[in-house]
Length: 568
Ligand code: ATP
Ligand code: MG
Image 1 (cartoon, rainbow, N blue to C red):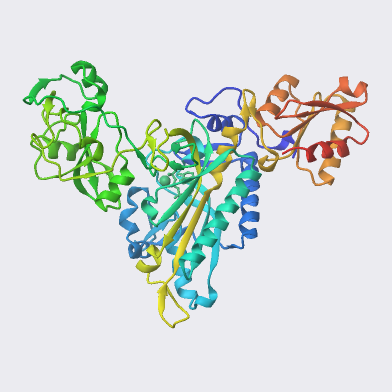
Image 2: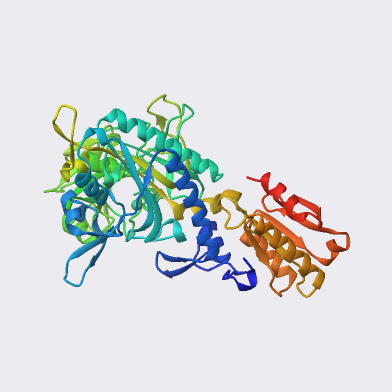
C-alpha cells in the first residue's frame, strides 16, 4: 500500500468530542470516521484491523468445531413476537417497515432467526450437538452511543449459537467456546479476565463475560483473592451493617431547600450518608415500584429484576415519580406512600433511625423508624456489591477493576426453543425442546479494546496479530533517487514475500512522516534515508519497544522478516 495513494487521513490534533484513548486514536490515525451518532465508516486501516481480528476469531471458532453461516440482517417482526422480545427489547430494537407496511427488525442478535432455521431443519437427536456462527453487522439503538466503536448503534459482532440434547452437552460446548475465546484474546495480546456475569434480557442460567482490563471500561468487576470474579451486576457479597440501636425519637419534618443529592442533605443535616435511606422509583415491566436503599449504596437493577420477576427494570420517568410521590424528583420517601409496592434492600432492615424524603418539595423527614413510620412490602437483596464489601465465598475483602466487555457467553437452556416450539425427537421417541447456548464477541469493540491497551503518547502501538499491516517503509526524502530506489526495492521484496507493507512515499516533511508513523503504529518501521544509505544501512525500529537496529541494505528484506518473526 502506497501512502501517497491511500486514504489514511491522519490528524495532528485531538478531536474535541472523543473521551477515550482508543476513540481519539482511531480518529486521529484515520481508522474510522463518524457518519452519524454511533454509526461509523471504517477506512482502509481500520477495516484491515477489523479483518485481522475477524480472521483470528474465525480460525478459533472453526478449530472449536463451529460452522460459519450468514443470516439476514433484517428479520420479520413476527419472529420477535414469538419470543416476546418485540416488546421486551424496548427502544434498543431497531425497527423498520417494508413498502407494504410490514414490520422488520435490524438484528441486534440472532437467537430468533437461528432457532427458526434449526426448528425447520433439524429433527433428530442424532444431528446434535452443533454450533453455528456468523460475523455480521448488528444494530442496537443504544440510548447513549459513546467512545466511538465501543458503544455504537451499528457494530460488528461474531455471534454463535449451540444446540444440544442435554445439559451435559451444553456444558461441554460452553467450556470449549470459553477456551476458544481465551485463545482469541491471548492471540490478540490482550490483558483480560473471564468473569461471572448476570444474564439480563437475553436470559438463561449461567453466563460469563470476557473483560479487557481498562480504566475507561464501562463495566465494573468485583474480584477476590480467592479467585472469585464477577461483574458488579452479578457479584454476591456481604455489606457490613452500620451501628444501630439508637434511642427512639419522634419523627421530625425538616426544610431542605433545593437539596436533592445524598451529599447535600447529609452535609446539611450532619449525618452519615448510610443513614439517608434513598427512595428510588422504578418501572418494572411498566408498573411503578418503590425501592429503598441505604444512601451509601446503589440499586442493582439486575437483582431488582430477579426479585420482581420482571424482564425490564428501568428508573421511572420524572412524570411517573411525580405522580406516585406527589413531589418533584429528589424528595421521594416511603412515609405515607400508598398504592405502590415498597421493596427494601436487606441492609435497610436493621436500621432504627433514618432520614428520608418527605414527598414534598424541599422537605426531608428525620428520626424515621422503619416499621413505625412506614411499611415495607418485602425485603430483598437489591444492592450493588462494591470494593470493600466482603466476599460471599471466603469472607475476605473484595477489590474491583474496570473492564471493557468484549464478549459474553450464555447458557440459554430452552428459553428460545420453548417459546418458538423448536423441538427434536429424542432417542425415546419424545419431542423435546433444544437446549441452547449463545456466544457473542464484539469484533469492532475488540479493535478499540486492543488500542486501549496498546498505545503510548505518540499513538497506537499495534500487536502484530491485529496490526492493519506489519511494516511501514518510510522514505525520508522521496526527492533523493537513491532513497527512492532502495525504499522501493525493500517494499517490493517484502510484498513479494507476502509481508503487508505500508510504504510512506509521500513528498512531505520528514518530521510529519515520523509523527504519522508513530501515530498509525505499525509494528515495524523501516527508515530509508540518505544518512543511513551512506553507511549502507536502513534503520529498523520496533514500535512497541523503541528498539532500533541498523540493517544492511543488501538483503534487508530477509533481515526485516526475521525481526518480524520475533514480534508478538
Ligand atoms: P453491553 O453490556 O456492553 O451493552 P451486551 O451485554 O448488551 O453489552 P451482548 O448482547 O452480550 O452485549 O453482545 C455481545 C458482544 O457484542 C458484547 O460483548 C460486546 O463486545 C458487543 N457489543 C454489544 N453492544 C455493543 C455496542 N453497542 N457497540 C459495540 N459492540 C457492542
Ligand atoms: Mg447492551
